[in-house]
Image 1 (spheres, one colour):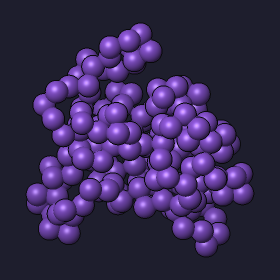
Image 2: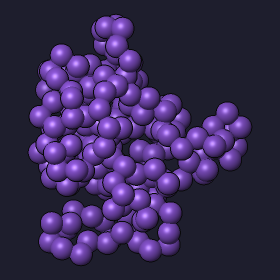
Image 3: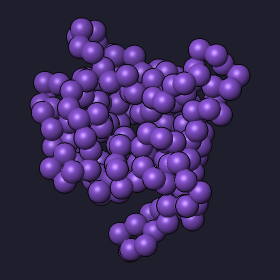
Length: 177
């Protein structure tokens, strides 16, 4: 909850961004708020999901449609303990141009030499049901995004935003900022 509020206060995530953390009680589960703007999330809004991105308990609450970003990354990256998905206007140009996102200050030293860009079109070209999708709202797209992320700490999402991962919630938040 606090990470959602901090990232909102810093202007890092908008009403559609979201933060998750791997469960400390069960590493095969993760915690993510129900579908709400991050700035209004309370402890009561946190849902628990399994690695297939299914709610552990059916609360009737609607989850974020892009929760698959989180589930699929956690599935393939046991080292990742937290994920932030955001739509930063400052990052957006790097998702659609040939100009690479590069670390320009010491605080960006976590960026890989080349930040990868996930392009939905690479996945949807052979699947008509996925054509035109710009949101990572199913397991197939989430898995493809996780593969493009690889062992890196950030992946850009063409025309959409990015996902940042960390070995802890504070690290993911810091990287998102």
